[in-house]
Image (cartoon, rainbow, N blue to C red; front, side):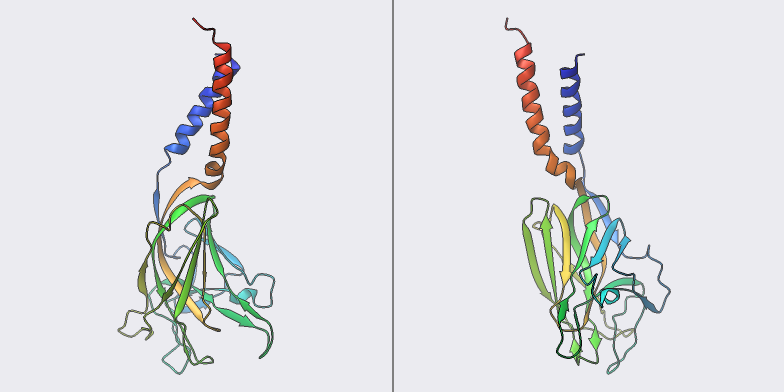
Length: 240
């Protein structure tokens, strides 16, 4: 087999691998991160869980240690003390805003999740909850989700939470949120809230991982090489 034919075989084999990639269901419940029961900790400006990396946009500011919080069955309440949601397990929280002084610069905290292995993914559902912060005198009620697809398109939705929050009481603090087919082939997902100085919380993120993002982007180049190879091969085959 000459070099041209070997190259074509390699290209076709590679395309078969990409085309044959199947979706893999993933549940991110943050139980793979060590957080003692009854506590809340800051993982810093980023951490990994379930094969995904979570990072805060507050990195590089005086509030970078406040952008992410991992809590395990943690609740202070009841009001008027600060009240965190109760789930009986570990969940992720994100600060909405941070501000320097009373009239200083405000920072919107955006938490972004991406596959550690560079895989595309489809968001299916997650559980979300609000927090009561005494200083602001109310609940965080709205969370915004923004997805960026592999092709660079963006999709966004703002969801108003149900306001149920009673700590370890009988109410279900976390509520399930579902996402449709539009939330497919994502390269990243960003989460934030514009409710001033409060926390949102998420748990049990259900998604499917797909093809490697770099492989998807390179596929058009692979097809171009295939076409070129076929043209060269045709020139080398004598007509009969």
